[in-house]
Image 1 (cartoon, rainbow, N blue to C red):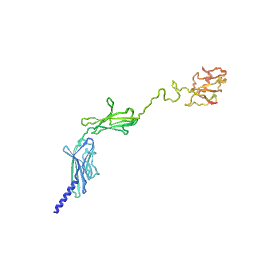
Image 2 (cartoon, rainbow, N blue to C red):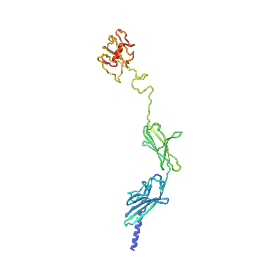
Image 3 (cartoon, rainbow, N blue to C red):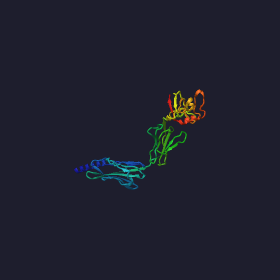
Image 4 (tube, rainbow, N blue to C red):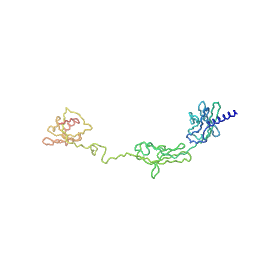
Length: 362
């Protein structure tokens, strides 16, 4: 009787352990071409049982190949075409799921997860489970448009972008268009992202994109249209007729400044002594004046030691003109030597002076 009880207890324990060590999986998994997928294979860890060996194998066209093996020596990828594409969690007890990246059409097949445990009495328990994988190509979905950080209302001069996003098997091609009311849409770009480095008012308008791939009939998917608004457009005012950028005195028809009208200025004495001549060329911002001489008896002789008072000042002196000098008054109101023509002595004086003269205030 005691042996029967012991046998019953042993069978209950074995059934309980086997229930705890059952593998959980799914019957079928669909993976997108060039995408990734995970084949689940999990169990509830049980005290007294240690995982010894984990293997993943694949059956395709009646041929079975071992893809992955984990044992006391580490992890091993045994099928070359799966290298760098498969992995199994290392720090998750009870999780033996296989993760596959960059799925290819030949990856379709039957995958078997097998786990072997060792009990405290060194007995081995083996369980396995099979999942069917089907790799498919997915047509491109209807794309959506993602606006940049500034949204769809953007200030003029800012940088922004619109991005066309679609899902499906790669490669997915994109095209951007700008809608024209009552006309044919304008093609803009064949990239997923449409960018502007500096928005202009003319960039405002309605935009949409299209996406397609080579799956099925290659149907083109079109997004909903979005309205891009450019606000705060800088406006450049044209100059008012008759004005220009010139801020100085008015210009003559030849483009030079018109003579300034000067008020009464202090009388100055022009000293034309040959032995004391100060050279002070006029600064760029200082006006150049005409000098009108009051004739006296000494001035008519054009003595180089004579002091000549300056009565009126004008805009510019022209040393080369023949009629650029005016003798305002002469002794006894005699208008001799008025410079309507050349005066040899006066020319000699100006030649010796040139631009070297000294202006002294009375």
